[in-house]
Length: 328
Image 1 (cartoon, rainbow, N blue to C red):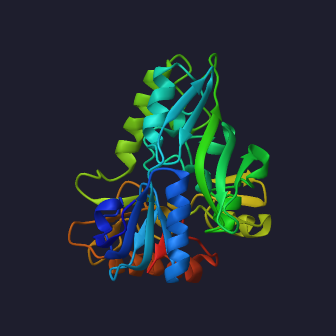
Image 2 (image 1 turned 90 degrees about the vertical axis):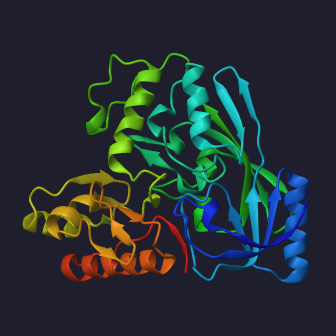
């Protein structure tokens, strides 16, 4: 294991923004991970865990501590169960499941990032969430160096959140197991997938990838972290008041309240689609997404996000949160 210095972080994130890491290390097993944490403690360095960099905005000034890139790989199959290392590509795992004719992950096709980061956010798309198939995961407790196994209902999953997101830095996910089905059926609960009942797994994956290609920027041309904001969950009273102003506003009952379509509010209610600062803009085909041009800086993205939050607060009376982790 080698500690490197002044490593550019922009190429390691999907935003392709931000400065360099003062110290940087790649870890490929639990022993190296423990060693990296010992080094951080001995030098009193702040730690940033990095997977695929798909949900992260790094400051233009870089990161002054130790960046630990998780590269713990390996995939095992046990019947309909897939067990993957935290450093494996999430979409590669979905592709393998589809090729093995295992149902459950196909609607989550095309989501960038790694297996280890997926449970932190409880990633979701097109009517499916990670919590629907996760059986267990193993994680290193950074306070005592022990490895624990968490079964699904111990992970504190909620809308784009988990125990691990609520307690950042406490646990480092090492691997995860997914309980899939050999004889499944299409999940057509999302409006864009209502016609998939007769499709096989490969066809469903292709359709999901095509939908994502229409809604998200091409990473070969622009940087992005996908959906930058969370859909707000409000009280029934707030939802009813907004429905009076905007009768067509999509609303969904969820645990804890009413989830509103932020994309609809930004586009229809506030006419913010395409709003920009510097090289950052709300994407024309999906206003939850911030796209960054090759000339953009992290500061542009941060300033645009703050502007959007202020507009929503002042004109709609609700607070919205970033889904992306911001280090600015």
